[in-house]
Length: 342
Image (cartoon, rainbow, N blue to C red; front, side, top):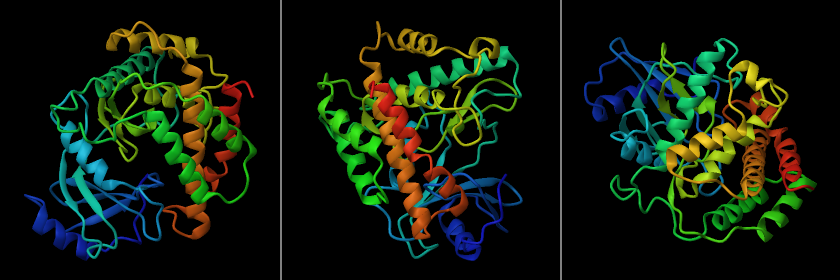
């Protein structure tokens, strides 16, 4: 549930909205969502409609992190495509308004699911929700990036080479202690980068069920959220990131499916999900999938280490949750090593 914010200047926000968002009329109130560890997120309410604000967190930030400008650009480009995203309303580069860069988008009412087991749904509903996740991911990866103006949204060259270098640097910048499994993954991934086959698509970077909103009544995705890690890259990284999450333990923090009876729940196996994705995207199969899984465990461990460091530095949006999430960095690293047989 949202909580009342103590770190948002409503007077400054109201004045800015009056100048920059067509049709806006106050008075304004706001609630801060408990999630959104990377970029603090607020629901802005007026008597006529609601909006959503995403902002960079305060404090000293890692280079290239918290890219709300990229979030705004990619969602604006996707608004008329088959990928469901909120309408982008306005972007503010002036840190003097509320203390950091931010953007405002439409508020979409929908169901969100933190537990991938979907305990409040029937097996038939679960199967349809997961199938629509599959459809949505395939839609992201088949966007015509030239037509929507995103061909320059990511650098050319080997996506995994760039990503491994980037997240190794981010991890080193936020390192607080030695995690042996991270050292193993850094060496192994560096030595096993697959050759660049020229495949370039839009990738979300953090595609999982808790970053999606579904229609209130139908098992249909109505919004893909949290595009901070999006770029032009290799689509199988998105696919592996979601399946990586399923390999984690069940529970509030890990949000996985390990040990769950997927068949009884109506949820697809990894293989079934991959087969449906290949059918939708016209692929015969996906080779070398353990590499993609190991990479995703490594990247998530690096992200969680960054969350932990922000918490220790006093810059976290939710310090208690930052500590809990940050403690999972070694766990994700251990799973990554398991994928490579270490």
